[in-house]
Amino acid sequence: MKKITSYVCCLIIAIATLSGCKKDSSSSNSSNADYYFVGKISGTSVRYEIKSSSTFQTATSAGGFLATPPDTSEHAYEGGIYDAADVDEVPYVGINFQTVRWVDYAQSDSLFLAHFTTGSKSFLTTSDVGPDGVSISYEASNFYYSSVGAVGISQPASNSVNVISVEKVPAALGMNAYVNVKAEIKALLYEYDANGDLTGNTIEIDGTILVPIEKTL
Image (cartoon, rainbow, N blue to C red; front, side, top):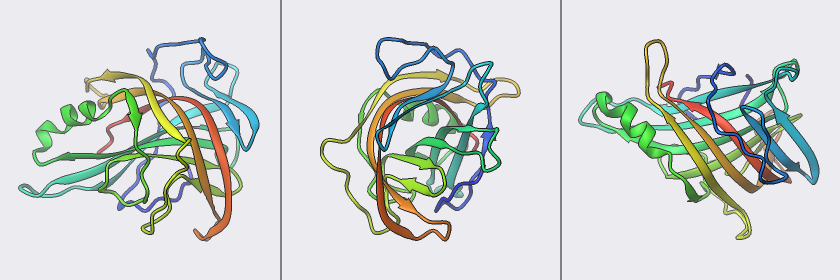
């Protein structure tokens, strides 16, 4: 999957076969699909759902750096949904959580799972790994992010990320630890062109996302 990141490393793995998440149909932005984003992008209603008849799949990515003890490793993890039938694998909607830290790698799985909790989350103001918070991304013809480079920018006060549920799945034979995260998101996203430069344009994304996030590092 094609994405712009500022991380030292990035690994994208399709994991559409993961299942077992809770389903809910209590609001107009919900779905009975295993994974989805349902809501509005620039005022247009969209339903990106993983069903037997759809071409959408999930992806997970990780970025950051591994340190040698006693230094601390720091990582960011993202889960998203995209259209696998499109040659550029768009549209894509993702939610990124950081920062997961550990000194002893033997504790990394438990610290990864513990990092994901329900409730309101702070927006990241920059795209650097290190601060704690959440960012939202969208890709279509160009790239859109709720955080802007190392300069930093704040979201309007009316925007928010609220994690509704987290299903935690420990590592098993042949499978990394992962979480199923469901969140209500409302964010202003800043557009980047194909060269990675800000265009000055923005879009608003507002909806509910349910995606898996795997501990790939």
